[in-house]
Amino acid sequence: MKAAVLHEVNTPLVIEDVSLPKPGPREVLIRTFCGTCDNCTTGRTVLCTDTTVKMLPGASSRLSWARSEKLNQFLNLSSFAEQMLVHENAIVKIRKDMPLELAALIGCGVITGYGAVVNTAKVAPGETVVVIGCGGVGMAAINGAQIAGAGRIIAVDTNPAKLQLATKLGATDIVDPRNGDVVQQVRDLTNGGVHHSFEVLGRKETAEQAFAMLVPGGTATIVGMIPFGQKIELHGFDFLRERKIQGSSMGSNHFRVDMPRLIEFYMRGKLHLEDWISAKLKLSEINEGFAAMKAGKTVRSVIVFDA
Ligand SMILES: [Zn+2]
Image (cartoon, rainbow, N blue to C red; front, side, top):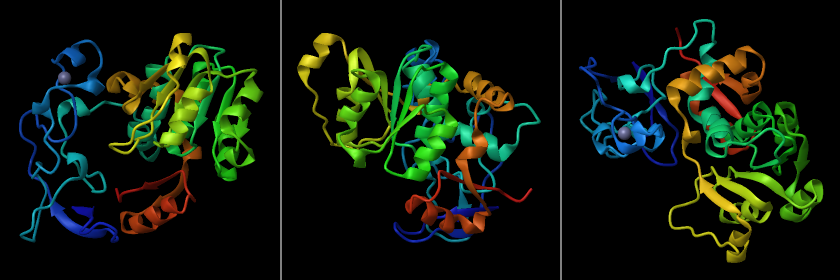
């Protein structure tokens, strides 16, 4: 099969011929869940603690090619290839009339943003929401807040095109940080602050802003990946007013429940998956896709494989 291979960091990917072995019984190959540890049996499969179902980074050796060097799999997964070998726990059946290039968006970015709002933060109807960062995951959080029935949904980004799209997906208000202090702008819009803030950039400054814009009792949810070793600073006094801050991983998803539900939302016109797709590419155009993403021109480019 064909797969996009990264030979060296900061070089373009190269399309190579690689092969996979036939699946063995109950294959364990990607990051998945065991179904039996404390977290799995209490419904938090995304936080599975059983290391035997997850290979350590770089440990997977299922892919092979004509060369002698080892072929590593990114996150033991490597989805930029025509085929994947996955554990049975990583599979869910979906309805046949769901377009696959749209379903492909749900599994990572959409379920992460939507799940942060619906599963992790459990936004209640009428509550106010801010989403800081309107990339693919941020857009999913905005769409998720609309599905959850949030009262006000405020999108924060510096890219006017993304703010425009955010309003199409459910944002009721937009805030551009270039127009002044973000926290003050949100407070002015909401008469003092919001019930829920979602940080979807992974930066110290915006994580601190997310906490600072909460009403007493409000919750900040950090979805973005803050660099390892980076600390964030909060006013200790704010905890006396029951403000909370929490992390969200993969939208705290329950994969086999959330995936079919999100597809139903799409089929009923509530989840606007078409709006995420800025371009459809062939596998051989993958480097153009990355270039457009780095330039901030796209929300998502989807690789459509030859049938
Ligand atoms: Zn587990």
